[in-house]
Image (cartoon, rainbow, N blue to C red):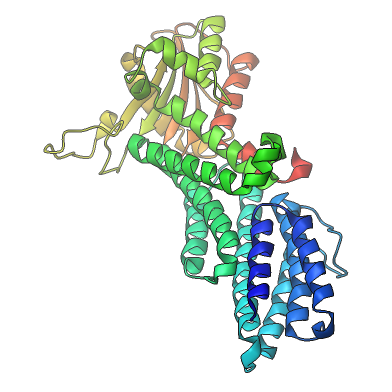
Length: 424
């Protein structure tokens, strides 16, 4: 392969990775004109496929795989996944054609490794589709999603190493790592593990910044292109997902975080989040005079339970038993309602099946002390409890609406459901 062809491939894939899809197509078309005499040969065939790769990638970054029809391909099934699959078939044929041809060794290598890249893209589309469908249900199966993305990462960690493909591999790797970190952070939050959740969110944020930097090349930054709202839809969605998880993290570990700063500064930081759960709870508690709004973590069977993540390294941790299995991880007002805990635990255990369904608000009135409890499952081990020191009826719609709304937000389903443009 000539130096000119190597330079072309580098320029083409750099432009694709930086979202300059039209420029990438123009480069391919110009190269086809230059190579007109050999257009029917392997190099000309590769150039034709590269133009289609640029079209497919433009649709992908705009979440085009959720759109039924895409222009640019004359196929019966013209979904983006079908486009990628068709390109993969065409490149596999080109690879087979050039397998024993010495002069076309680079064309063979690029065709082979582009096929690997397209396979990774199809697998990512499958993951996004699974996340979107799961988001329309009652509960996200984060462990299943983590297993899916980790399988993609492991499978393709050594794929498409050709120098010309370095830029698109870097972008795809960052996208996979961001998804992996965010989904694993959610698993750790559900187990109320502070340090692990924090490190994973930090890792996701670092990779988002690196991905944004790659998307905004020197020329676009200099000219002021690619403002925040012009970044691709897939990137913007990852930003939203991180923001949703950070808001949830801040509520779950509010007590730990507030110890690292002043209460006033903590409140100011909460006000900058995509959802200020503390303010929502504060406003509700004051308006309806609730005795407490509490989040309870069930540590039953969690042998490595470490509370907020801080413990003395020389003191072994025994798994909690009995009522000690239930830890108050957040409460407003700040004073923990420990006196209510025995009744709350009893209500949780008696209504375990209903709470697990994650679509009901459990009502309980204790006539002995005239206390009312409303409970809703937020995560498999975390329950939202609203307590009133008076009798409330089961049909208090303002109360049940608040509990249903905040529980739904904390489950984070909506951000996944909204992956599909038509569901927004």
